Length: 436
Image (tube, rainbow, N blue to C red; front, side, top):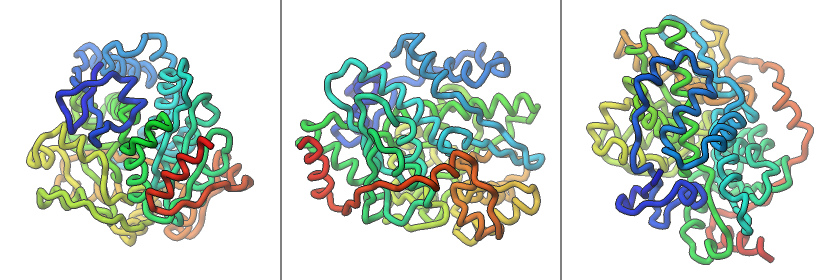
């Protein structure tokens, strides 16, 4: 398997280099040279595969021998060890629950796969690998937990002060060992900017072997393809008319939709995507006007989607080429906080289903899409356990449920973090001082 940068499509690197480097020196994003098609036999047998078995088939097809067979099987079996159930709300609405992993968020899929892949790639290295990860909420906690205790790898998580939930913060700041948390005086976009600048700084790249665990790293997107296949399999088992299915995706940095596009390119018959965004509607405006204008992110109740400059936009353009092609594949809606709360209340009243604010943005977007497309059915990606956002649940529903044990244990732990300005010179000094 070879990969290229979206800014240098004629230059190729190995999977190992792409994963360990994270971001190309030209500030593009890595993409596979070819996206192979899955065989007709795979789809004929799909309902007979377990989640792990179909995951192996998909990933091995994409990687084209880049990893030894047994190594890949072990990575898949270890990383994809929790379910992704499709829950039916009504005849047309299905929720794909992606929050049954260690940190109760969809990013457990990517983080666990990535940690095992990177561990394999650096097992014989003398130099420590330093992972920099910017987070608007769930990425940091998933990566921190996925890499916790992994030898020869150090993780530095940057998160915006006051813009993540208390439980999200605790998942990043109570682990210790090889996990360090930096609380940045700024937005998620500031955190992401600091990480990108670090990768492009020659002094830092000489001092440390740096890589990223955000969805800018291709190894995050590969496992995120897998639950689209798993959802499709479960729909077939439920005898749902899959030709009418659209996938509704709560979207911030647009890694999930990019992964869905990759799955589609490999042959998964996805009709259309609905990008569900909050007040950070840069992509929504792009679809309306054809102009991409990144902006400063604003804080919302669906904080993991508070992204004003979605990195994966470059990959979407690389996969779809033109504005008109993107518009054919993706529709979008933008949902404000008031409508988010209203949707959480309505879904609970009608279905007795508790949705996190991000899932509620997806459900509201789906309802608007269905009003314009009454024959459609949808799978809405439910990205996080609702009790990670207990304050929002209480605001919407007037009461909260008991915390799951994985979250309850965090309330007894002390947070440990370092405060950091949004100035690159301060972040660079911090990284260089790690060697002293």
